[in-house]
Image 1 (cartoon, helix red, strand yellow):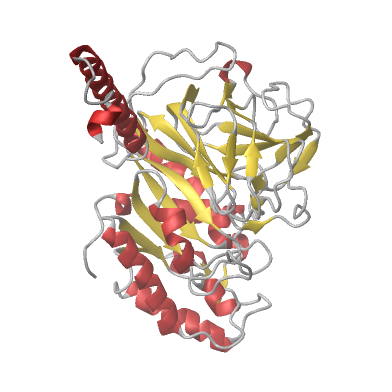
Image 2: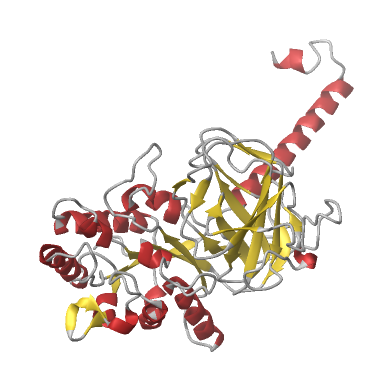
Length: 453
C-alpha cells in the first residue's frame, strides 16, 4: 500500500525523493502547529502575534509574558426571551474590567445553554475610551479570529477560545468585547447579575469605535465568559468561587465594588509597593443563588451546583494558582427542609480535593450572618454556626478568611453590622464589600495546596 501511494512500484527515485521531502515538511509543519496549540493554554511564557483589523493579517513584533486570567464570569443559564432568535442581527458589546494588564489578549465565548449552533461572523476587542462607555479607544480596536478566520460556529453546549491579538490592556481598565451573529441561535448563554452596563446595537457594528449605534443598555454579560492577557505583571490567576455575595449583587453598578475587585486592587498595590507577595490576576466566578450541593432546573442545569461547575469555572481557567471559596449560605437558605451541616462541609471538602489534585491552594470563607432576612430562622442560624465551626477548625480549607467575625454586628452576632448591610440583611453594602476585601490576608495567597487535609 505504501508503494502505491508513492507512485507505484515503478516510480522513479526522483519522485520518491520529492514525496519523502514533502512528507518531512508536512510533519514539521504539523508539529509546529500542535506545539502552538498546546502552548496556548499552559500559562508559560511565549510569543504571540498581532491581528489588527486595519492592517491586514501581517504579524506584529513578538511579545513575551505569561497567560493569566484578567476577568471571567460563570455562565448561568439561557436568557429568557431569546429562545427563538437569540441575538440575531445585533451587535453585543460586553464591558468587562481587567484585574491585571497585558500586551496581548484573547477571549472565551460560550454557547453552553444554546440549543442550536451559534454563528459568530464578526468579533472584536478594544480598550474602552472611558469608564462605562460603549466608545472604544480607536487605536486599540482589534478584530478577533478563531483558528485564523473571522467566523466561528459554536455548537450547542460548546465554547471557543479566540486567537490572541496584540493590544496593550492596562490593569484596572474596561475592555469592550463585541460579537455579531447574523442568524438565530436559540437561548443566549448569559450572566444576569453583571453589575455592569453593557450595550447592544442593531446590525453589524462590531468595529464601531464611536459607540454611537449602541443605544440599548443591558445589565447582562452575553456569550463572553473569560478575558485572558499575556502579562508581565502577573504570573498566575486567583479564582474567587462563590454565590451572590461574591457576584456582588448589591454593589454599585459600574463601580467595580465587588469584594474580589477590592482584593485585586489591594494585591496589586501591595506588589507595586514591594511586598513579598505573588503577582496574580483575580477573576470572579460567583453566581447569585449558587449552592454547593443542588443544581437548578434544566439540562444542562441552570445555576449548576458548585460541585458540578467547579471543573468548568475553576480548574479550566487559565493558569490558576489559588481558589478562594465563599459558598454554602444558599444551601441553608434555599433548602425547603433544614439543611444538614455535615453534607455542606462534606461538599466543600470535595471541592478542596478537586483543587488539591491540581496542586491549587484553597482559601475558604466563613458564612456571614443573615438575621432579618426573610429566610432566617433560629434553626437555620444553628446550621450556619455548625458549618462555621467546622470551617474554623481547619478541617475544610487550607486557610480561612473569617468574614463572619469581621462583618457581624457586635451587639447581635446573628446580624450583619448595620453599616455593612445593604438593607436586605444578607448581602453587604459597598462598605461591607470593601471591608471583606480589606481583611483578606494577602499572605494566604502564598504557597501551593496540600495533598491531604
